Length: 316
Length: 253
Image: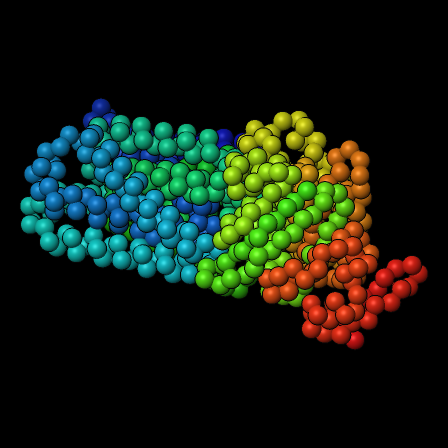
């Protein structure tokens, strides 16, 4: 644990250095204009990275599966679908007219309900059958994405604009009051996840062993899924879906932490997720001269990692 | 004392156990034997409170394992299951320490560290204590799992085929260790163990329960159950039982 804690500090230091690089490197023009702009963007990157990393570790533990992530099984698509459904039912003006804070909390609560019901069922039915679980998860993800898209086609163009805001991974347009809410939800969910860490360690042994040790496994799965939903809502509401970021963050976090103990792997995945996004943004903004998008970069490397993990599992 | 009364169990629509009535006194080793699919594992899981029976009841020293909180149950009865290999970077010491979960619920104290160290020593795991599980052989992993169940410090210890993947020396050591644990005295355990090695049952078990097709065929002392006629009825193959150097040996013909 001592070594693990030292690694966490090193990772935090790296994130700090990357953040400083992002804030101060190649600063041109009026500093008091550029710095706040960059700081807002940095906060969004860190929040999204941390939320995605924590959500992925939680999800992988209760799914007993290192390949699935909330993004792959369609948590974010479910969120977009719910948002679209809300606009369909209430009308775009009514939804856009809601106070941002209330709207976000309402949508988050809705996602938590829907996700625990849907994915709780998936885990109960396919527990122990890894291949079937991956297939069901991926198909579910595609289905939810399709449903979200279909619902959007039913919208009038003006109403569509209300939903569209939420759908594209973009760190360019983040509002500051949104950031405050997101930070609050992330802090609460992160603290709850850390409190659950010992129980998550036991749950990581698999449902049969965990139950034998007297852990109420169903309850842990339910709580973890609820936290995952809250965290996915944070990152999707801020910047839209980035499917493979979680896989990168969780895998890197585990390697860096060198342990499956959640007291280490949760913060390590959070820091890794944040570091990946900040480093990616530095590369894309300052080195590639905005010639691509960060989401594309992350999806590219995340997709490669996904393939590598699948192929390694085949052989092993 | 474990009392199983008129217990039936189904896995989905498939009936597995039929009207099981069984009473196991505390202390000693009880061996569960029977052909594949006889329902030995299912019965063990019902007793441990993990498989909910369709009918009937289980009492462990008067406790209904389905009525008490999970952690209370796990302080009364520990179960070693036939689990798929745990591909985890957990170290052996960390795995064994999980046996203390029902006692501390996430906040281990010094007595938990002590119990973990004692379990590691008892199962010859000191040299492996800091090895990650995914670097162990099947037999070593199996021993670590048994040590974890031991660290749970429960009056009842249920083991589902603990000799799987063990070499002769470690199989013998494990049975001798269970035998010693189950002798009367302070901290004595009552052991119920599913065995496919009938000779291990003949040598170490105080009682043998023979099962077939979801029914208990016989439950008595090892000498009374391990007879050629009864074994043939249970396993559908001919057996010869011989005495050698004061030991009962069972062979298929």
